[in-house]
Amino acid sequence: MNQNIRVAIIGTGMISHRHMKVWSHIPEVAVAAAAEIDASALKAFGEQYHIDEKDLYTDFREMLKRDDIDAIDVCVHNNLHAPVSIAVMKAGFDCYCEKPMSASYFDSKLIYDCAKATGRKLAVQISSLFSAQTLIAKKLIEAGKLGDLYHARISEATWRRRPHVDRAAASCSGAFQDPPMAGHGAIIDTGVYHLGQMLFILGLPELDTVLGRLYQKVPIGAPDWVDGGRYALAHPMGVDEMGVGFANFKNGLSLEIFTANATNIDQPGHSYIEGTNGGLQYSMPDAFGGDWAMGMPPFGELPEFLQPTLTYTGLDEFGFAVTTDYRPYENQQDLKHYAPETMHWFDNQLHWYHYLTGVLTDETRYDTPLIGLNTSLLAEGIVLSSERRSAVTAEEIKALSHSTAMWRQETPWGIFDYEDSF
Ligand SMILES: NC(=O)c1ccc[n+]([C@@H]2O[C@H](COP(=O)([O-])OP(=O)(O)OC[C@H]3O[C@@H](n4cnc5c(N)ncnc54)[C@H](O)[C@@H]3O)[C@@H](O)[C@H]2O)c1
Image 1 (tube, rainbow, N blue to C red):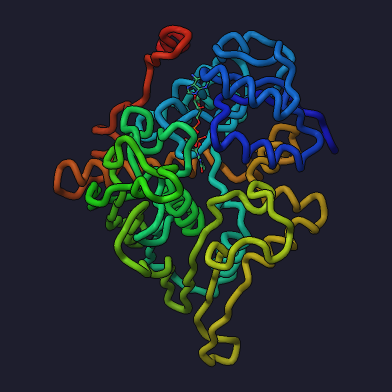
Image 2 (image 1 turned 30 degrees about the horizontal axis):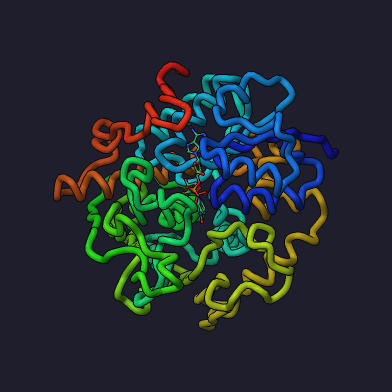
């Protein structure tokens, strides 16, 4: 059952181009309009993707008045996710929101509640959920290969180690380092791919307490002499670059967290899940959206250090100790060739498309807003615990969390006052 969907994009910065690559693989989706406050970026986007000038908007609220668009792809930066996504859903559009769902639990909850209240179909971009690595890990746990789960660890140093170019290249506008726009650093940025994936694999256990700490010690970016200053930043110490934590869940599970956008540690180690019958170790969850988003040919082109790994250690059916190396990257390629009824599991935009057309329902789709909300709760626990220098309970996080969102935005086209829209 193929249905045509007309999508519009808000924010035509760096990530929108990856979205466009993926949309180009789904011929049933037409990107019919785009909105961007930077007029020259908007014009260039229109030219690159052959979007007519009349379908380009510097004020996205004008675009929301249209009745020939089905759904909106929100590609603005973190602290605009809540204001823009809420305006989108209130205007009657289904919504695909970039990660992190928001920079604070409070704002993520606003988005979550808005989707429920308006009945709009919301998805949050968490590409790591759609990788073969996640699928295999979940299947091994469901099959009882790990037994009872009791402890896990997330370990990620996205830009791997210094000396290196850290976070700077990832945004057209430098918004990743800008506190009013980004909210926080690694813990809600690359961290959400790892937190979201781990919580999903563990079955969304209910959070009990969190002890955490954020650090702003290592300047992010690179010296001026690297690549003509391309990666140098005006404010390299803007947001925290490292977050660590320890969480307890109500079912008895515990979780260690290490996430960094810049670190002097060479090998921060694998993520892992400990069970009474077996353990899983893994690295490099898919934070790129697969080779569709990266624009790479199907086989063997993702650099090896970016390819996901997954190792199971446990007992075989005879009781002998075994170690099995799964090959998530190769399996990821195979997922594309499965029957149409299963292929919507391997890419998040494709998954959303199938949700919009009704192939996937509220019961059968990955509930990315709920996973995003749980991820925000855990990340916010680390933020609040770091501020208070003490552990916080889930109830305290919910009570203490406040909005970091930009409800009033200065743009070249005047003030966008988002509070008006809800
Ligand atoms: N760049 C990456 O590698 C990457 C990867 C995954 C997810 N993301 C997420 O995508 C989001 C955007 O990141 P990015 O790298 O594309 O940032 P970016 O700064 O390159 O792009 C954001 C764009 O939004 C525009 N914008 C701001 N306010 C607007 C408004 N009111 N209406 C329309 N346009 C507006 C900005 O002018 C800018 O061009 C972030 O939340 C980020 O976490 C980025």
